[in-house]
Image (cartoon, rainbow, N blue to C red):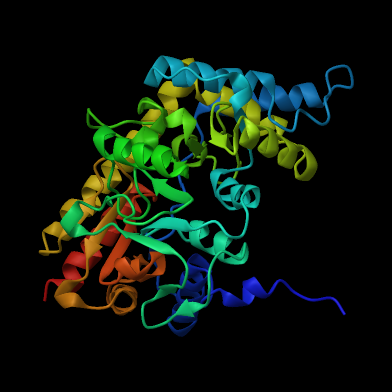
Length: 408
């Protein structure tokens, strides 16, 4: 008899964002005709940059002609895409990488989950708390945890690294040995960004403990203040211990187009230098036929020239939304973090109200959807994440509704 992977049954409840959608749908069914303003899921809303669209249209034209049609590309990504990313890292962040260390994919989320396949089930995993759910859930399914502990609101076997108000929402290194460390900066959900010195402590720890850091830099283009690294490879020796994942989704608006990348340095040591690069290459060649060639054409355009400037304008638009949200909530006395180097505002619930209770209040009284912080881990309780991804008029309307309905 066929048997399911029992680790799937360990997963606590439903995945966060479908649960938000379910609750919102139920509420809308009970309140027909009422417009709901969505500041929950981090889904981009504005049109793609014209230069990016033009590049993808040109690619489609090539595909429409038998003489210039191309089928499967390299599983690792088109050479032009990998070289464009290599140039991007060099020119913008001063980081030298080999083009063969880049692997192009359909997004950072799938890479964050798929990377755990490279590591054995006995690895001890550390995650920031709160954390993007895919880091946790993929390792639960990979068999690296025990059961969910409802009392502690976490999985047995995980090492949770509290990212809380007292430490500026960036954790200290683990006090015990771990093998894999998931870090995200700018952070989803808290909006905090790590300094170079803070990342250096983790690189030093990883080198000392022979651990591997999986660093999510999907929001790096949102860093507006000086002094913060945009890539972990700005930290000395990080190439020897860190894998970086990133995405075109939030920079170029590719949430639906789908395109991302993972960097696995050849000097990264796990048993032997270069092994993880070889294994990830083998994994991609075996299980993946390469990212869309149309998407990659758009990705190349977003990294250079007019396309890059236009994508930077998109980022500026969402950051202005973030400013409006943060200032709007602060007018009600709500304590807010993030929203400066990140499209997310991490807001304290008033009066210590639970995350889901405040979610329900905002939906019921203000008709605004946010994301309950508890869905990101136990340290997220009594917070909500508010997303700046939305049309400006909807963001303004949401803040006006919250101020009008919660001020009393």
